[in-house]
Image 1 (tube, rainbow, N blue to C red):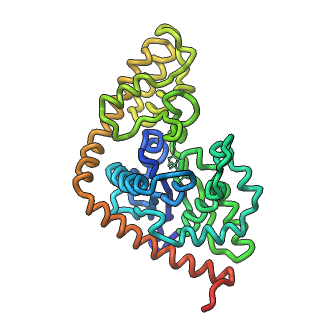
Image 2 (image 1 turned 90 degrees about the vertical axis):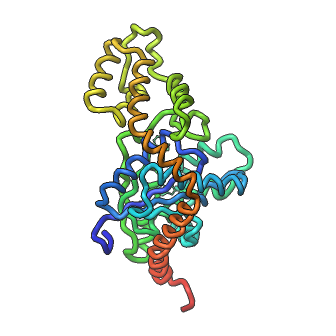
Image 3 (image 1 turned 45 degrees about the vertical axis):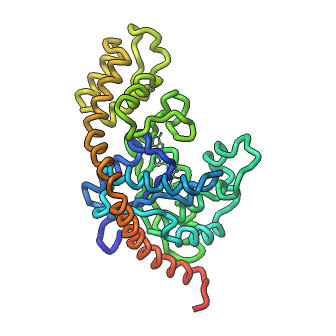
Length: 332
Ligand code: TYM
């Protein structure tokens, strides 16, 4: 709980250059619902310091941060109703990460699946990629967040953050609450190729703000149930990515009908995707308009991020004062 009496929610997203339908369904769309409801204190962060763990172009990163801010605001993260900011604008994130590295065993980081996947077969692996989960724990702890809405690929990192709280509190006193994950219904959207999760780095995405025609062409070609070779073969909705998306986006009646018509082969995959496209359009048309408006107002977005950093910094400064005191750091 916070001074407002509301639980504090924190989440982050990398400025990957593209908000895709996986991020949106798995995370951002639920964040926007929480912003509309206003039952919680909400803090959302564009985690640029997490996006420098592999080679990158600084000018491009700058543009990606701006683009992600516009995408998020267009999706409903109204800066007047939540705190939206860029991680590196609040220096305390890296400061806390530096301290937390000293309560984090090496073995825990070696066990992280995402590190293993991203470093597999590479000769040139940076320390920042290895210590990524420590920075992520710092992001959450800095705001003493109790709820962290994420897709299921982040659960292992979140478990490490919880473990970090226990270790820190045991050594230095009860400073941090244990953050609980909140996983959305569509917490794992598969890539268009059906090869694991949808992810920019795998090139198997549909960008949320892609032109309608390009969006449809990609959706039409998306992988479904591999056992459905012919139109007359019955499908298995529970393993189909298109059905997962229907469950998140279409009406309950449509979801029931989709299940029935898939398992009885009454409906073909292309028709099923057309209906899904209509469900996407229902939500995306207003978001696209908002996104276009924001393109014409770069100053407004800049101002919002500045204000967001200011709000975040107020909480972060207070937490760091407590942390330094508890750890016996500082000369004053
Ligand atoms: P990132 O930027 O990869 O993804 C942002 C959010 O989108 C979810 N997501 C998905 N959900 C369903 N299906 C998918 N295919 C899919 N792809 C991505 C992610 O689970 C995530 O919730 N390490 C984090 C960012 C981060 C963070 C934090 C999150 C940094 N610090 C503190 C929470 C709290 C990441 O790389 O997310």
